[in-house]
Image 1 (spheres, rainbow, N blue to C red):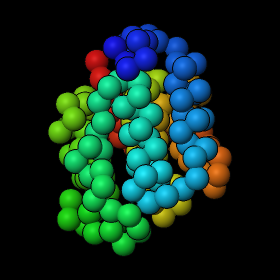
Image 2: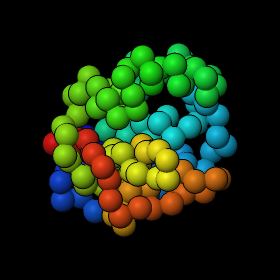
Image 3: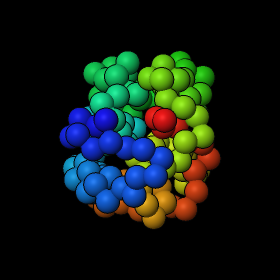
Image 4: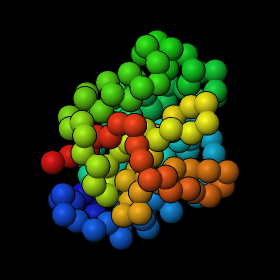
Length: 139
């Protein structure tokens, strides 16, 4: 059950997910507060009551600090996988409200599954991509 009382099951359609994504993703960018990782995890936490990013909250406030954490974790993908596992998320879940890594030119971005695909923040707005490299969610 999400914090707002909505039960998010595998068959849930997700209109509320898009409302939360739009609200959270349209906040101004700020490292450690409203970046690609924090935004996706903020949406996930609001929907499911679990914050995969909890161990990193308050540990960086600029690009340099974020890169230091990523390097210490062995890379971006291993860091995301480790945080998901520590939060008890199940790999391979790709329903609205799940988290996923989406390939972008020269990098991958943490995104949230919405009915139309994977939503990610993009220059003051958001984009939806059709596929994720990896995904995690609750069952």
